Amino acid sequence: MPNGVLEIDGRRMAADKQIATEPVSMPTPPVPGLPLSGLKVLDLGVIVVGGEQGRLLADLGADVIKIESRAFPDGTRQSDGALGISTSFAAGHRNKRSLGLNLRNDEGKAIFEKLVAKADVILTNFKPGTMESLGLGYEHLKAIKPDIILVESSAFGPTGPWAKRMGYGPLVRAATGLTMQWRYPDDPESYSDSVTIYPDHVGGRISILGVLALLLDRNRSGSGGHVCSSQAEIVLAHQGWQIAAAQSGLVDPLEPQDVPWGVFPTAGEDEWCAVTVRDEADWSSLCKLLPKLDAAMVRSDRLAHREAIEGELVAWLRERTATEAMETLQQAGIPAGRMNRIADLPEFAAYRERGTFRIETHPHLPEPFVSGALIARSERLAPPPTRPAPLAGEHSAEVIEEWLGFGQAEIDILVERGVIESLSADIETAIRELKGRSRE
Image (cartoon, rainbow, N blue to C red; front, side):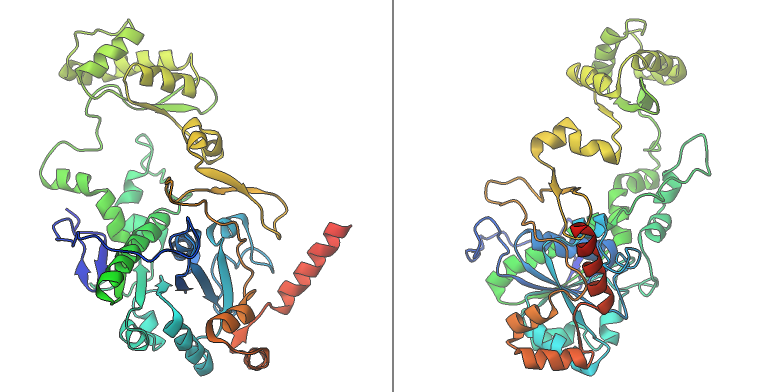
């Protein structure tokens, strides 16, 4: 089985690890309902997994400072015009502030070290060794702030023969065998995973679980820690049951275990419903809905007559919408679920009732957009704040003044030297043009 998906201080956090369970007292957060308010976070993360890590903490009230520079812009900003704001960026970086800082500059590095001395958490998702190449490895950061928590998320983890490899979602999915599975069975070349960014969002959450664990431990021990996660190992963990079954010589877990077992067309164009008969009870219930089926058939008979049985099911499904089929089958106790497209999710009854999504706006986007509303449902958690995602360098002076106490004259000198970057001329021009168009 995959041996855990997270390393803390070099130790694999696998299922057999003994974890301390004594109660830990957490300080009362300054803002009720936002348990991480007062926490200071330096976010060096990029693209999706990097953005997700910081957003999760920001949504819980932390002061998350996205550190970026014009020389090395976040990849998710590069295709969105001068402002660098798209719907996905707006949703993935809400509640953060942006500090333009040149870490390749000695003065910029010195500013960063001063920020580290004030910080609680540092987030990264570079290739392993990048922080060390900047002279900012964990041991150096720990010497500046002994209780600092550093996150390093990467494609293949910090050790092993592939540790230094660059990697992102598509490469990770291919290397872990997922791409081969993500195909239509009748078309072996129909690789269908190009439109997803899995496992980035999962990777962000796994890393933040490590941060929360270390924050709890810090209240007990007074020390911080080093969190490392591998996106590849996250995918392998999700496939753990398949790996174990294959290595044990068991039935191929991707093959139907009973009949019907799969995704079938319903009424409407390209509409589908998943149906899974698990046992004799499910089969008996299905036979009451489809009287042409033989209730006396046992599993071996059903497997032998799969095509005929599924033909009867499809004929029944074709007379119903995916939602009608799902609800009818579920009421009969048979596992079933309609296929949802991305656009269907906000109005899907289960998500609507739970308040999973919300409508947000951004001052530099022309229309409102749908975004995730919850990290978890809890009477003790307030909804995430609605601070819009920042422009690059939008809060540079504000952050340096608040965190380090620098005066405006000092900040102006640092901006003039290119150590700190405020809003670029291109961004300011684009903002003026937008304002002009809105007045028209």
